[in-house]
Amino acid sequence: MEKQKWNLEPDSRREFLANLVSGAATATVLMVVGPGASADHGVGGHSKKHRDLVYVINVNNCIGCGNCVRACKRENSVPSEYFRTWVERYVITKKGIYVDSPKGAIEGFKKINAAIRSESQLARTIPKMCNHCDNSPCIQVCPVGATYRTDDGFVLVDHEHCVGCAYCVQACPYGARFINPEKKKADKCTWCYHRVKAGKLPACVTVCPNKARMFGNLHDPDSEVAKVFKEDRWMTLRPEMHTHPYCFYVGLPREVR
Image (cartoon, rainbow, N blue to C red; front, side, top):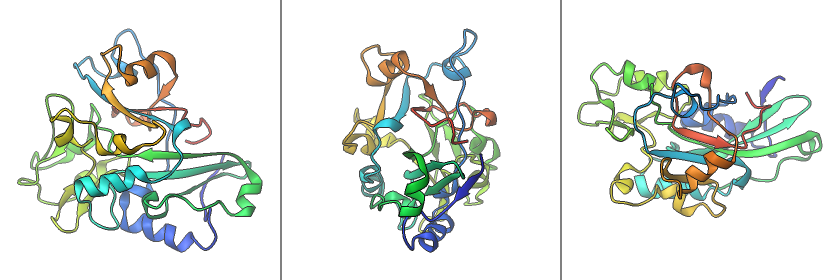
């Protein structure tokens, strides 16, 4: 099936293309179904490093309201036109897959125009962000070691050492990084590391009205994320890149690649 970027809303094509340029995060459109757990590896073929905390997104529950994007902006002082997390809308038709993400979905989505709506077979809104990969390309390409992984598995940026070369921005297969225009340093989602270390949930998780976003301890049988792994089929984005992401999806449409 052919993938296409299209204006899903009346007169929105120019705005959508502008957002793709100004907020690198919204440019990623490829995703594929991930592998299941294996006997020789941890979750999804990941290494057996002991990582408790994971992020799970249930696409079936996402309503594209933009609460998560707004909460992230407030919590992390993300510059205008850039996004640490964003939401993309995918509409699947017989002619192709149409994608938009107006302003990262910070104001939600307008109604799909009539022409596309008449051809629609399936429509989903899909949150995206840094996947905090176990095998992170951004860490590998950083020439000064400014991008690093914490002992508990978070991939972060040391702004004191970052030189703003943007190698990591180019290396990320998820389009999750950008150069902060104010700090001139690499920036991205941290899963609100400062909140998690204080015993709180990421800001985006706390404002989701439909529990589309979940964060917790995979090895705690009573946690929401552990129950999701036990009861539902999960997927990851772009497993062919072998990054072993720790952001997992439930309900990701197979038609979207």
